[in-house]
Length: 211
Image 1 (cartoon, rainbow, N blue to C red):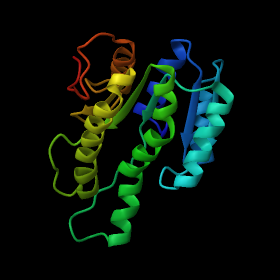
Image 2: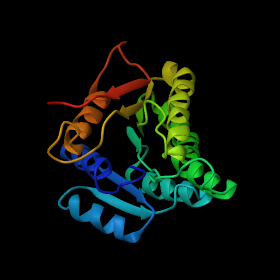
Image 3: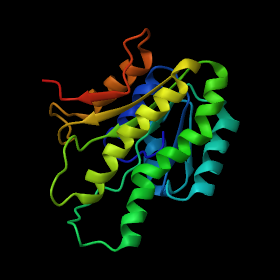
Image 4: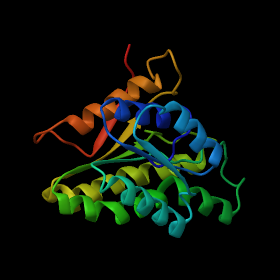
């Protein structure tokens, strides 16, 4: 799990731990790792700090977790910079910093892990999407999330024949406990996607809420 903040990240980590999987968590801050460890108490888990925008450190963190738990059967990229930013408010460097987390880190993760997963003949790579349409005042996310969907399509073309399943899960509403977009409901969908088999797999998945 890359990106384990409150909400989808922690809920997905707990859901997979509940299924008996060892869970490795990568997060930017030690505080986030501590909260994830508390949420996963009593399960097989480990946390490593790394900024998804820092390619060498992200790769090293992923290697640490592979060394501990082996090649993963499921990887979830959930890292994102969620901010309000109108066109013209950010510098070019600030746009690049956001893109590095919102999209490029997902590419780095795929490049680092998917070849090893393909060698095992199976595996799932899920990326948390959103922004099914551009939203005024949310420029960086509106630009990056369609990029994740394109990445999912490219990786699906590359790895489907090797037995890997790749998808973005585009959450179409505001994530909040006790609503149709409760993070635990979303986490259940992630689990269902990983557990699915057969030819129905599609790289673009929408979570439109459950009532």
